[in-house]
Image (cartoon, rainbow, N blue to C red; front, top):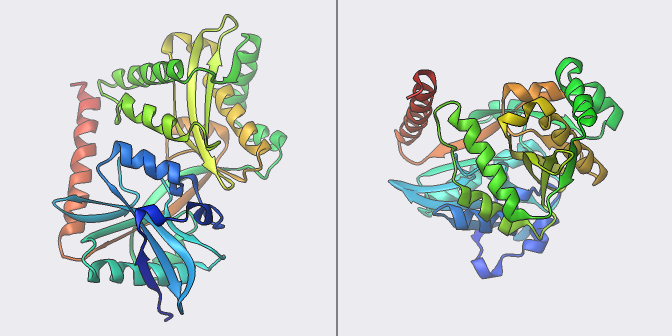
Length: 338
């Protein structure tokens, strides 16, 4: 097994330009996104340089915080963030990535930087992780292959719901536009989102300040796309937030006013995002988790591993119990509308 060494990088000395040149870079590992997490979560960035035989070969992008015990996460649940982990300067196999993670976990535990570690890495193949000594949870999702032609992507949309809605919205005069007023956009987005959750007697899983922080940190970086569906007379019907960098686009969130559903604004809004990212040279579009409504866009189902490790017995069980309890309470509230 090849030995890898790690060095914690001082926050003022992080080479963000070099990190963005890594072939496996994602928007969630950018300086702007880390600042967003600092603004919205009680975390500190943790950037490590990775060395092999004294040669710099890559970085680990993560965050650290303390909640009963020290945690290093890349990322953690509830942060509305995905796919951080390793950023390598040259392509490496999944087997090499596993070796690096094994060495990294030992380094973190040995130096008492954390007692719980987890990382979601877009590059990791779940079948190869299954054959390793790493523990993991399964993250499920839907993705679109943007290397396909626009015509083929549209053809894969459900004809009875998605294609029909796009045609109907066009007849209704619905226009999809990039927002020009972020303050109004934020107001409409969060009002629409709150309405969606209110139908289930729930509150959104994040507050409006998180949306403000996301847009403020990314709006000048060309890493965020804000789209609005507007009626023929300029009324906002639906909103969508999309982020992306280095060939991987991501659906962060979307919502609409229920009173305008007959105008079918949601499907053309997503279709416009697909066309924009494709025109910008993106090759993959992650639809942001498993939800029934996303199936109408004809995506491919995928599974990714979330690597997890604990220094002490019982930590993973406590974490799993806390997660189960949280979602259990939300499910009960939804079912009984309390």
